[in-house]
Image 1: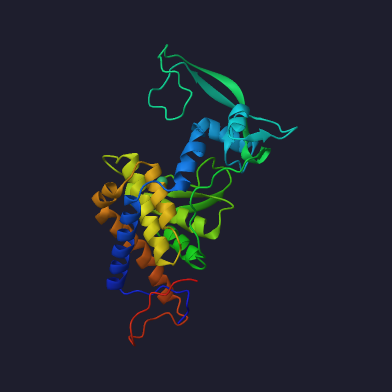
Image 2: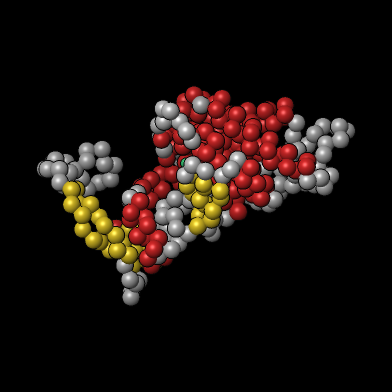
Length: 296
Ligand SMILES: [Zn+2]
């Protein structure tokens, strides 16, 4: 029996899913990790750009990951390198001080609400140097063949998977029948992002009453975590931090438990069936316990 293969009977699968979700629930109960705090205080400052601006950035600088203005980079301890050409985008100028702003620098008083657009220059992180940016917790390990199986599952569901460097400040995107994964991620991260977007496709397409972003992100990340766990990836910190980033909690997780479990079992089941169909000694012969093998 190949050591990389996950072969579980339905019961074992369900048990594994339950254990994984318990582990995630306890991780969510713990406070924000140091890594998440650093991320929030620094990377939380990056804008979420509009679709139009994302296109403008992707056209001018494919592969851009973190984009900010000259001064923002300075505040983050980084300098735009000499001779770098800025990326032109349109910035809405809003004269309104948001009370909920978590960063310092908001002076309090509301003045007036006015929106205008002007062309501004921004720079990608690769055009700057200086203090390293804090990294978000990452999924670790080696998914091996499982990435291929996960992609096959997507295809069977009629979902197209594309790898692109046109994503700005997101690792993946689910667009109803199509998933885009950022190029250049580690194998483990790519696997986890693909599982996350697949969960969105399974759970959040064609909704009559759309769920809140917190619930959607909690569900998708929890499914991805369980699928990662099933193939032996290290993902608990990354998943818990991600869910907290979207204000999810143990309670959010518990409210969606059934939906998460079903989607996870469906994906893991499909990967497992593939393995047994492909042969190669992966069938459980009934001798001894079925093995839940973990990739090294
Ligand atoms: Zn998501």
